[in-house]
Length: 221
Image (cartoon, rainbow, N blue to C red; front, side, top):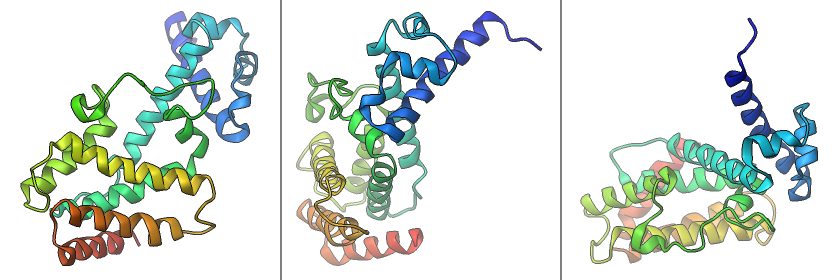
C-alpha cells in the first residue's frame, strides 16, 4: 500500500533526524551539513527546509531525540525500594550512555559548536528544566532519598539535584576528554566513590551509602 503525503512527510522527517544522529556519531559535528544529511536519506537539501525550516531546526530536533533516548536509558536502570542504590544505578547508566554516544552527549549539552543544545537562560536550581523528563528522573530520586531519611531536606530538591548532576557531568566530561585513561577507572575509582562522599555529605551514613553502592553494583554485574 502506498503511503499518503502525511505519512511520507512524517517518515522523511524522522529519517532526517536519524541520519543526523548517525552521521554525528560516525563522523563528528563537521558532518552536520544539510546537503550531507539529506543525501543520507535520498532527499534533496530542500527537505531540511521543508521539515525543519533549516539546519537550526533540524539540530534542535536531533537534540530533542537524543535527550529522549538519554532519558529512556536512565529510565531503564533498575528501580528498587532503596533510593540510594537506584541513584547509583542511574549514575552508572548516565555514564554508560555518554561513553557509548560521546558526540551525541556533547551536542545535548551545547558542546558542539555552532550547535548549542542547551538553554543557557535557565537556572535549574530555581525552576528545574520544564518539560525535561530526564532531569525529572533525578529530582524524583532525590525526593525519594529525602523521604527515606537518607538525605537532609535542608536544601531544596533542585539544589541537591544540581549538585549531583554537576558531579556526574563533570566526571563524564573528563573521562570523554581522556583524563582517566582507558577502562572503567573513571567510574570505579572516581565517579562512584565521589558519589558516596557526596551522598554522605548530604546526610546519609557512610556505611549505609556503601551498602547501597554494593547492592547497585551487584545488580548491574
